[in-house]
Length: 102
View 1 (cartoon, one colour):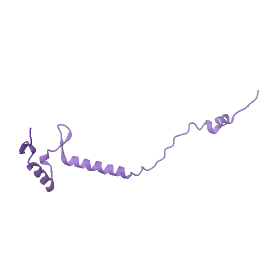
View 2 (spheres, helix red, strand yellow; view 1 turned 90 degrees about the horizontal axis):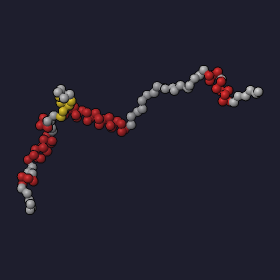
View 3 (cartoon, helix red, strand yellow; view 1 turned 120 degrees about the vertical axis):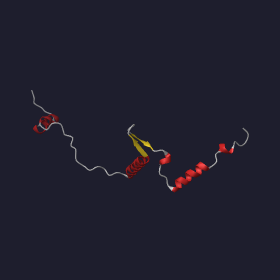
View 4 (cartoon, helix red, strand yellow; view 1 turned 180 degrees about the vertical axis):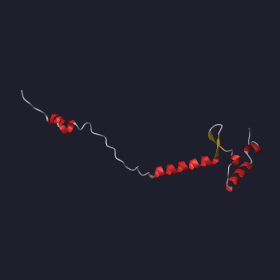
C-alpha cells in the first residue's frame, strides 16, 4: 500500500484553500462613464421635446393626462401667423372649378 497525492489534491487539502471558500466576486466603486456626444444630443432633444409638450398642452384632471391645446389658442410668431393666413386665403382647386374634361 503506497501513499500518493497529486499536486491538485495537495492544493485542495491545503489549509489555506480549505478555509478560503469560494472566491468572492469583488465589486469596486467607480464613477459612471462620461456620456458621449450622441447621448448628450439625445438628452438635449428629449428635454426640448418635453418642454414643447408641456408648453403646448394642458393637464385635464378628468382624464389625468396632458391634452394638446386647440390650435386657435397656441402662441404663434408673426411669421407663423402670416403663413397661416396666406394658406387659408389661397384659392383651392375646388373653388376654382374643375379644369379639363371630367
